[in-house]
Image 1 (spheres, rainbow, N blue to C red):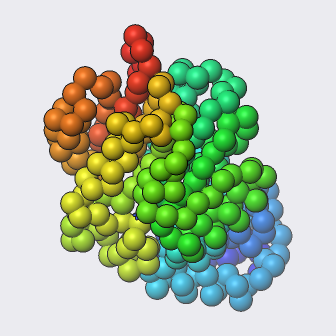
Image 2 (cartoon, rainbow, N blue to C red; image 1 turned 30 degrees about the vertical axis):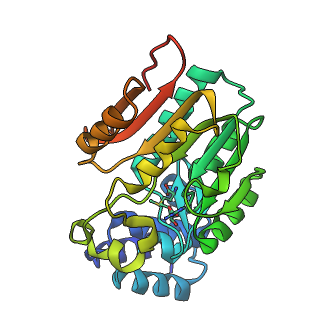
Length: 286
Ligand SMILES: C[S@@+](CC[C@H](N)C(=O)[O-])C[C@H]1O[C@@H](n2cnc3c(N)ncnc32)[C@H](O)[C@@H]1O
């Protein structure tokens, strides 16, 4: 059977989970095609492993996220290994990665030699992405989950970057550090299980999702502001839940009055990012 024949057969068998994106991605995976255009170029080739495709389709139809079925996810145009020990990287996190990159360039130049920490690294996407852009910088990636660090280490190896991985609770693994210029984090921030879609709830690690109260991890990371860990000029970059701006503003205004901070919206217009910047005398837009 050819890709063309199977593609149009599956298009007629679409389900809630087996949508067009899933069909294309499963066929691309079989042929090792980087994108849909490459699949089209090989549309009349014979399928390589129909049994594997059938198994993948059955798993997707069963509700398992496509990225766990295939074993990898895309993050800013690159592949990262994922399994059920790590959160599937989300589009908002891609926006955080790019926003953090741009802010680092504005603050520290294009070839900074700085110390960057990714707290709650999961599959490692944020830290690895930044290390690829800033090879002269030191990147430390931390997570409380040993299993997620195993995946992050595989991703660092696949991306040919040297990263200092540390296991531990939030800021504990960096408590003896100094001169940290950038902390980036997408910590767990969901307070209420009922707001999570059933597929995520069933398959993705709850350790990556939930926090009680939901501002808990931001408060812990923000406590670095008063410590000797950060360099004088620094950036804290966070992904946040869309309903958290008021609570986080309250925390900043009561505990860290006078610091410079900025909330940013994602491409859908939802407030999803918080950048805290200390850089004397200059105002930066993220
Ligand atoms: C929302 S996920 C983010 C994963 C990845 N950075 C991303 O953006 O795709 C949060 C991560 O924080 C980790 N985590 C949860 N509690 C933690 C803690 N107390 N200390 C350190 N990491 C923690 C989880 O294991 C998970 O990998």
